Length: 103
Image (cartoon, rainbow, N blue to C red):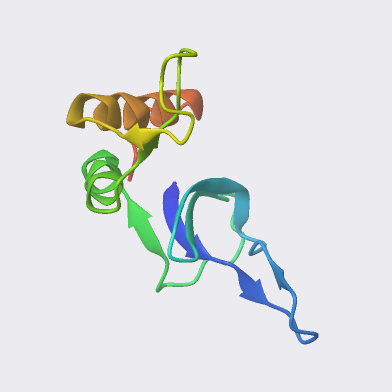
């Protein structure tokens, strides 16, 4: 399942990816990331934010996604993605991770 998560803080102050995240680090915003949570019985907190396709698109829209340059003439800092690009990126993410359904 697709989730929004925060890093876990260790006793020594360092942070790490939570153990229930099997693939993460996507679309960072305000110390929150998008990732894939384990579906193998691993403990997953009830408070974890689960995202379906619509929620992923909304998150990417509300926290503007930077579209990276695709040609040498583009601004190297990137630009804000269009609605169509956000939808494409969300669908590409879902497809890449082989989700038939994204609940």
